[in-house]
Image (cartoon, rainbow, N blue to C red; front, side, top):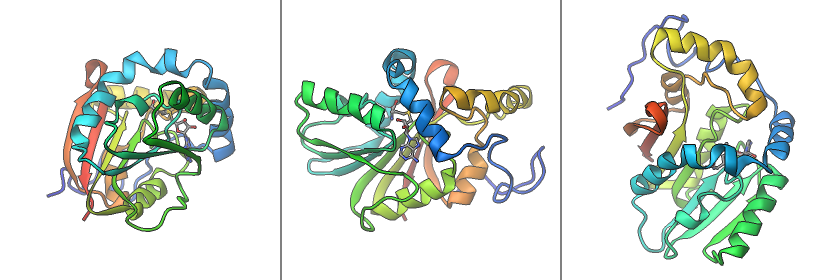
Length: 228
Ligand SMILES: C[S@@+](CC[C@H](N)C(=O)[O-])C[C@H]1O[C@@H](n2cnc3c(N)ncnc32)[C@H](O)[C@@H]1O
């Protein structure tokens, strides 16, 4: 059963067609931002966003031998969290972020983790390659979150898990207005603050089995879906 019904909202239009964010970004802009952020990413976005990363690992229910795709692996901050009995592929667009991830994987001897430079909106993997496809703090970063979600679903096997960890626009009207107002600014520090969760799920045709609030003040959502 869908957790959100398709209904009109305060911004007009049903959830399947309304704009997901007031901010628009292009891939080369995102690449430039993360080129700069790579040096400070772990300090700025490490500890504060870590409780969500730990909850996501629990929701993945990883089994021995599982093939996991982490989309937007960044500096590899999640790499050491995966059990060694699974096979992890991490992809990212940013060479600077991936360099940090490669250093980490080598330093910590994480032989079950491989890293590849790739655009999440056009994955080069065959259909149904992975048991679990996970996007931690990615979908509000990319120009086209719906296209990324479609690609995530395509490469996930039927019955597999798609796990999305992200900040979405608040349902509170006051906060929601503030998040929309600042979104053109927050893209300069790496994310849109106003991505609309019901609209995103409807347009991506994802039906979550759970949505949990995580991190400080529950301002981030952990969305778990089963691939139909
Ligand atoms: C906020 S960071 C998340 C890093 C990490 N997953 C975490 O848990 O903190 C977002 C990452 O997504 C990457 N990214 C942005 N657009 C992308 C795209 N189209 N394809 C692949 N990676 C992308 C950025 O380079 C950055 O490393």
